[in-house]
Length: 243
View (cartoon, rainbow, N blue to C red):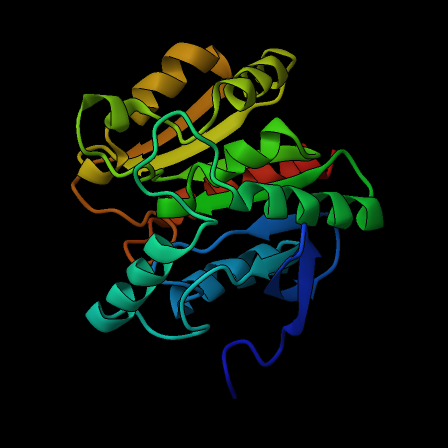
């Protein structure tokens, strides 16, 4: 049995762009955005835990081969795919990735169907900041930013940049000032995260909830999984979406 066989496959289209989706569970909606190289077995395992805690989880497939194990070949394949796609940007400063428009549309559709205070959005690695991009202009009530690694941390400016346009960043700050909290996870010495947690602390204040682990590893919820981090995410989703 394949790892995604128990999930309902579908798709979502926005502005003429279509991506496959996988859906499972019941309860408030949570969009889990996979990291590089794609929807790996570890990403699916994390998503299954979210389902088990009473949520409707949607896994959009943005790049990579679904359910393929992490390997050097899969990573190179996905990086090449991301680099040539107009939907993604690994190096641009002060710019919201175009795929955020698609993700916001997915969030609106899910919230319109399920109701409640909003949906959860979990971004990881290259997609870590996408949860903030969704918060800027979609009904997201529980944004989770796991080891945000985009734009690529080359140079001082990129290490601090959150991958948002100035307009979207102001929208995020307005919503956070109004009470929406943001949960962030990282390993303290992860070079891919750069100085983004410092930016989030400075700009969002006490409404940025940082969960940090010692070491130089990267994927807090998947390949270098920390169970404490997983539990903090699940508790955050319950608190924000099931009140």
